[in-house]
Length: 296
Image 1 (cartoon, rainbow, N blue to C red):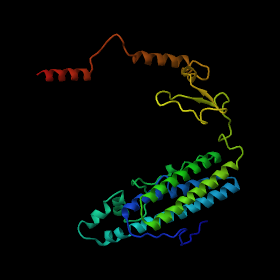
Image 2 (image 1 turned 90 degrees about the horizontal axis):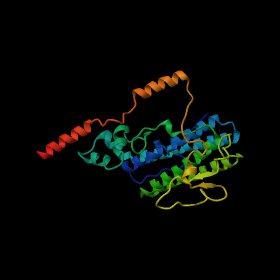
Image 3 (image 1 turned 30 degrees about the vertical axis):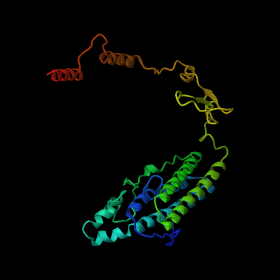
């Protein structure tokens, strides 16, 4: 059961309307790193979660993300207040056109949604459930959640940098800060699961779990660090040791029945490429015709 409190989680104050800025804020309303995507990600995880502690945490944070959705949506609506009235009542020739087409997707926001908060991102693409990347394994999902909160924080930082409205900056700063708090909660929940790496039940194959294949070699140097060198790694630089690492010949094969083999042989014979001829092609004939035209 959900109950709504009409007071926003954080007070929204906007100094003046700015539909262009509002169109950028749509990124956190209907975008992949936005509040609705986060709320749906954590809510769906909570529904299927069997651990009472994680279920409670996920429901708390999912509900808070809906509160954040209300905050960012209210900011969008406040930023489009001026254009909303003029769209409905009309304005002097050219004034409204100049206002709603001066940047971003403000024209889409104004014309299609009447200045309302729409479930689209800042480029006008509709929200989609594909933004929710839950896979149903807590150690995977918690890592994904940490990354999602980190990405959302970066988007809020960028939005803070594109406005000079002090009150708007404060509200965005609050939303950004809550992303940090959620990262902390998810990370604690992850490390409360022992063991939590590797994800899932099956261990990795011992022969390969600690090998680092240095496959990108050349100019620029092969940088060594704790991610590819040291006591945790066996670094493989030799090109010969990077292929057929299982000890086989590195080819692909399949067992087929005798009947299937005969059919495959007929297909191969029918479609084989001849190496004893050099037939002229359309491209070659066209090139020759072009040479004749040039000569003329």
